[in-house]
Image (cartoon, rainbow, N blue to C red):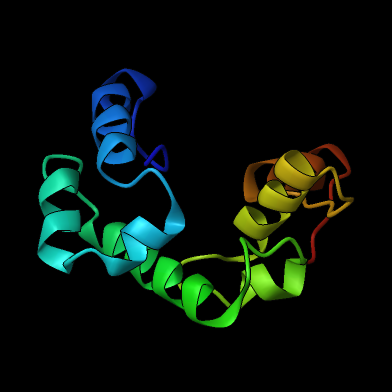
Length: 115
């Protein structure tokens, strides 16, 4: 919810979403229209659809929320940055990433010319 959205905007949505879907199984079994209704007003509805699809895949293919980087990368809507953040913060596993703004900063500081 916080991707490209301010924290102050998200807080109420987050609490309502968790009250309705307290775990991944509840989210997975929900009707997509219910998920989208709770997301309504945040925009970027593709994120809600991908979150819902990821929950369904987790329930179908894993016994619990996946902790391995490669497993997370196989979920809808999860890219390298998000997967790295999840395993680093939630599971205390090393999965270093350098996000785009940091890459640009170092490229400028080091006066790199190549991509």
